[in-house]
Image 1 (cartoon, rainbow, N blue to C red):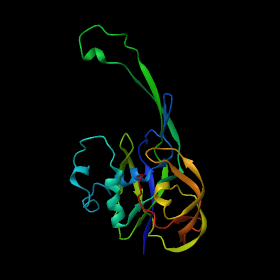
Image 2: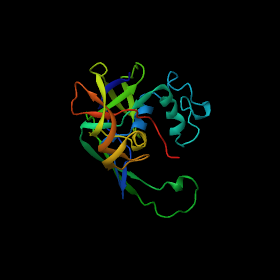
Image 3: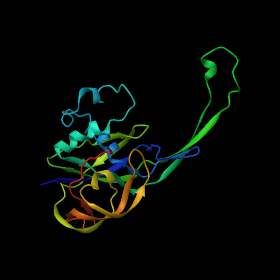
Image 4: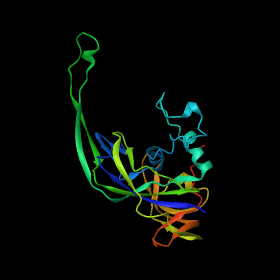
Length: 236
């Protein structure tokens, strides 16, 4: 029987990652990818959860190259029956920050250079006190951290579990999942009928998904349905 934790995430710093780049505007979508949550929750680097990760793919102490290894890092979670959904916004606001930079080549070589022309950009970030919700599905009891770091600036966020694991039943029919999902993780176990796309790297998410298959029906949240048998899958 799966254990399903309902988690709330509250930002204590502004959260930034470039979901979209529109000219000089770098925008943060108010959805947190499930890959990012796995890293932030310590499920990748923790000795308890990453015992099957080869040492050359571990980020526990040192990251020798900036090359993502999602398949190598997340596959051990499949083997242990642990899955984290993306996080949706419960309430949020945005702030716009302007940053400036200049060409500093004249610091490298003492020779005549072109004019030092300043440039700028703008980052649309998610403001502190914004709240998100996500679910952790596990085949065993987990102790999640209370504080985590997210985004480019390693922003501080609080993980809140206000209730015990959710009581649920498994049903099978056509249903609608309003919670955002990773399409790669559900397309092999459910027939997807329609959806809205949320464009963001490394894998665009989907929401308001109408699908056919098995789903979790919760006693305390009647309007929420989450697909059964979600696991991390990757493009071949």
